[in-house]
Image 1 (cartoon, helix red, strand yellow):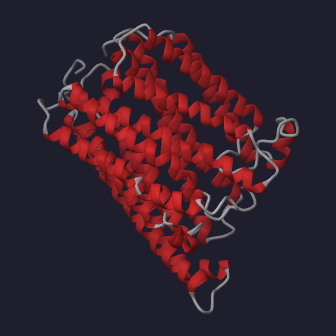
Image 2 (cartoon, rainbow, N blue to C red):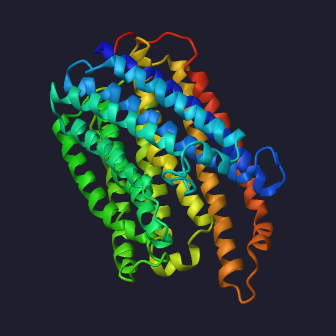
Image 3 (spheres, one colour):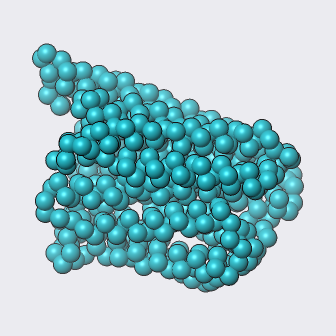
Length: 459
């Protein structure tokens, strides 16, 4: 560890992994409720389990991004963090606010929670992924502002690099676009129109800048390839990302009452969105093939390569499968969407956060890499989680294709619930794959506690 203040990243990483485990547990509960409808009902209704599952995903990824920034920026800027105390204070505020919000979802009826937290003053609740109470949203803004102030001041007093500037642009974009979560117009078309300004422009816009910066940082560290080479790749990737991702928002406007021209704009530009993910895959493998040294942290290299491949498959290939308006007319809102969402989030964001944690945590604990035994265990976790996610995606894709046929194309279309009965086999297979994924995640956790000889000192 080159700078003492980098140590503030450690609690963020620990919290991220803990919340990740919670997210998967609630995902398995939801998966079982798909096929056993009264499982845990009425104690834990499906809508509550889903809300907790998706909110935990968002919160733990934000913890991961913040921890990664606190670790990266001092090294990139070649200076200590502006205020480690502020970073730790914001960590506890964010963690407590997140925990209280989840407890509110679980133990307070949602309508009552809305009344208790000021939703009558400014109505922001009730929308998918943005279900957080008004007080929680305000807390997120306060934490984000403090975090961005800390990171920005650190960069201003130190070296400026392309990687740190791209990271900062992505983080500021994340905070700015979240402000649209406070705008909840009564008109349903406007509501969905601007709702995507948060959801889409996060995951298919500014989050991709964060992804690119994190991946570039790790690849510099583990390959020894010249910074100039990696930064040139990064410029190309983020340019393609912003050009395709921003206008590609239109693929969400097909059927919500927006102007018809979005069917053309959305189809054309979202069809181009796989290009930056493909470039990212080529970038990762190219840098590893050109490496000038063998880094002792083999597991981190594996996670970095896996990020490129799985992001391209999930966000690129599976996104393209149903992004054209004539296809989306039939597939919209089906399990094909769920298949795309699962693999895209895992490949693009879950894996890059795990890449950073895999690289940084051993250094934060005083060694360049975990022991060979621990790394073997970690690589087993990589393959278990990744293969399980591939099968989750394939089973959901099969369920979605059958759902579209039975419910929307057949000459004698079935009702929604009758269709769900017909595809329940795929839900059971998805649940089994989810259990394997959880086993892989537990092995990932265990790998950090495996003792053995390891090389001392940061690389």
